Length: 492
Image (cartoon, rainbow, N blue to C red; front, side):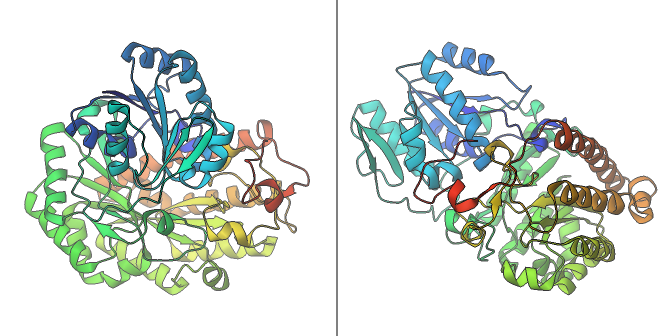
C-alpha cells in the first residue's frame, strides 16, 4: 500500500526564524512500523523550504498514495494549517484516505470530524499499533471496527473505538530514519542533527501540561540499545547533535545512569541537548561529570515561574531554591542552562514583572526562553482559566510565544514590553556577554553565540509582529464561551 506522510510547514516563530530544522520524529515513528510491514512509504516535509501548498500537493499527486497521514508536534497551532492542507489534498486526490493523528486531534476529534469532512480517520493517543491495524484494514477493504484509538466515518455516522493502550515496550517499533535525507536537518548552528525520544510520559501533574494524560505512565527505551542507536546515527549518517524530545528523560536515576554509561562506552563525539527538571539535576549532582562526558551540552529547565505561590498553584513540584541550585550545578559541570519562564498563569501586575526580572538575574542562567501560559483544552489549566478573556482568537498563534489570555491589571502592550525588557536585560547582562564571546570553552561559546544570534532575530521579529501584524480582541471573550468543552471550535 502506498502511504504518504505529510509534515506541514508551521507558522510558529521557532520554525520560520532559525536556519536549522529537525526531522519530524512523530511521523518517522509511524513510518518505521509501516515500512517493516511491507508498505511503500514516503515523507513530504513541508518545513524544508518551507514548501508551498502547491508544492506539497504536486508531490502528493506524483506519488499517488492510497492513504495520506497528517500529524504535527505543533499541536493546537498546527491544526489550522493541517486542516487547510488536507482540504487541498482531498481536492487533488479524492480517492485517498486521509488520516490525522497527534495531541490536538486526540482531544478534538468530535469538532474536527464534524467540521472537516475531508478527514476520514483520527488516531487518538500513541499511533504505531493503531496505524498498522488501520493500514491492514484499508488494504483489505475491511471495516476498522475494533482498532483501539481510532475514530472514523461510517457513511454519515462517526464511530469512536475504545481508547488505545500505551505501548509498554518502546523498542517494539523503530524510527523510520530511511525516510529522510540527513543532510537537510541541522541544529546548534548548522550541525547535522536529529530529534529522538528516550522515554514517554511524565510522573508529574503540572496543571498547564497535558503530557501525562496523553502518554499515560512514564516508560523508557532500553538504555543500552538506545545508546547504540545514537552511536549508529553518528557513525553511519554523520549526526553530530541529538535533541531529546522527552518531557522528563531523567525520571529514573538508575536507568538514566545506565544510558549515560552505555553512551560513554560507545565513544562517539555527540552534542546532546534536551529538557529535564531542576530537581533531577540536583538529585544527580554526583553524576553530572558523567552527563558531561556523555556529551550533554545544554539542558532546558522548565522553571515556569519565579514566585513560590505560583509554583504551588501550577503544581510544578519544585522550589526557587532548587531551581537556582540546578543552574549552579550545571555551570559547575560545564553544561549550559536555559531557563524557561512563563507569564500569564496569574493575572500579574507591573510589580510582579519587576520582581521576575530580579529573580531571573539572581538565578544567573546562561540562556532564557520566555513563554505565555496557553490554555490548551486537554490541560487542567483550561478549566482554571475558563473565566479569563481570550484576546488572541487565531489558533495558529496558540504556540506559547503569543499572549492568548488577557490580564485585568496590565494591558497587552505592557505585558509584551515587560517580557521583551526582561529578555533583553538577562541576555545582555555582562555575565551573559562574557559567556557568549569570551569564555574559554569553544564548544559552549559556539552554543551561546548560535542561540544569541537566533534570539536577536526572534526578538525583533516579535516586536514587528506585535505592533504591525497581530490582531487581538478588545476586550475579549471568556475562554469558556470562546471554546465550550463540548462545543465547536470557535472561529477567529
